[in-house]
Amino acid sequence: MDNKQLGKDQTYSRLLNNRLVISKLQQKNYSATDLANELHLSNATMSSIVKELLNKGLIKVNNSSSKKEIGRKQVFYTINENYGLILAVNISNYQAKISISNLKEEILFTEILDVEKYDAKTIYLILLKASQILMNEKFKSFPLKNIVISLPGRVNRNSGELLLSKQFDPELFKEQNFIRHVFSLQFPNVPIFISNDVNVSAWAEIKKGALVDVKNAIYISIDIGIGGALIFNSSLFEGDKGYAGEFGLIKVFYDNKYDYLDEVASLRVLIDKAEKISNENLNRSRTRLIELYKENSKVKEEVLKSASAVGEALSQLVESLDVSTIVIGGRATELGDEYLKAIQEATNSHLIYTPTIKFSTLGRDSKIIGATAVGVDYVLNHSCKKD
Image (tube, rainbow, N blue to C red; front, side, top):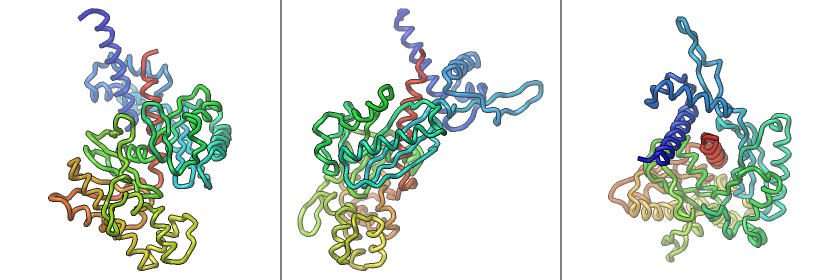
């Protein structure tokens, strides 16, 4: 092996070890000796890694975890939450949720804006509000490390470009990467990521929710629209361009014809049907739909019928992908156990073996939790590199 190749291997090994140390410290506080034992590294190597990460400001001594032993003091290390901030913005279901988090993935502040439509005015309003939040006394002294924006629709994983989505004003698509461009004008030196909202929800479930320690799974979000994500080998599979998981485009047999799942089982469609049944204007309210589901037997019948359509679509996926776990997210989870049971029965009726089908454990916070995790991972992966 020549010296050039040796140098590359040593650099890669050092970066990997730095990231492994950070990953351990994301879970809990460790001493250098415990880290060395956990990662099977020498004390000298660990001492060098810890020194480098301390100098970068990524970690710090956690005095509250230090404990005195006979003749010496054991020092514990932790992620430095003051290293910088992550701005997470989720735009979906006619709301914009703006959140500020630290490197420990602790959500420090969240504000929700109701929006009438997804147009340029709304994007500028979100940017203004985010800028105001960051100027708050609690945050303005800390650097903004990156911005993660999650929204419905197809997002090209390579370019970050949002393709035309029927929920957004077509004017937003006249300029390539309009949303990224607007935010970059205000934050010119901050990395900006655009991601599909269901993908970040699935990532949240992998890291902190119902998909922890699950190897292969399907995540489906049932809300104003229907989307999904595929999990293979405990990682999110996005496809070549990032478009994997468009489960709303699966066709199911419904009312004596084949139609897209999104057009028969999304909450958007169920709200329209509930309005006709109840002769009431729900004003796009998912909360009122859920109330009517519990109050009106005909609305319940229509909702449970849609659940069977979801089950039919899931059975197609399970049969093709051979996964044993399905997690359901979105506001449809608030329809409760009877809705879940209807999905389970319809799914299992088409299959030889029965997968585990369960609701998300993170609820409405999944998108912000996932977006924050994406932002933190980016910061840590790049900051662990040797200067």
